[in-house]
Amino acid sequence: MRKMSFLLVFVFTILFPLSAMANESPMHLPEGSNESANMHNEAGIKHWGMGHADEALKHFKEAAAADSSIAEIHFNEALALDKLGQHGEATKHFQKAKDNAHGNDKILHSDILNGHLSH
Image (cartoon, rainbow, N blue to C red; front, side, top):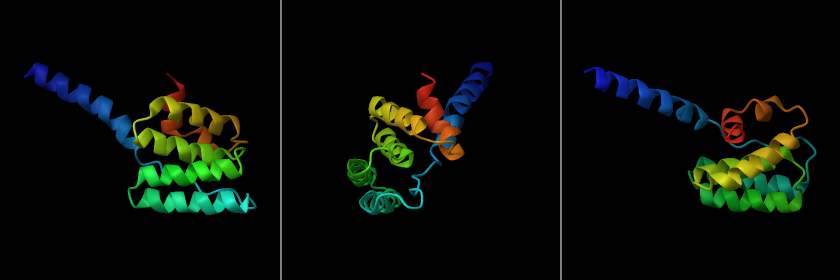
């Protein structure tokens, strides 16, 4: 019984932070962002909402091709990469998002971003 209790506590401790991170979703671009980047980012958000992380990633990459200086695009790419199990690439984009955040608290205090960057 003690082993079962320990196991349940251990599993809950591991899974709870992951479920909290799973609630994060892609971000809209700041007002006045590059029009093409914004169009692709919005398409990516739409696909993300339908559960199509692979299609969302394609659009986020197109958004980054239009303007790679926008933190929200890197954050969105990282979310999609993480969802697809490409954690190394996700970490690189989370770092770029943090580097370009310009005080955006939603990025800077993101659980999933900070989880990736703390390794």
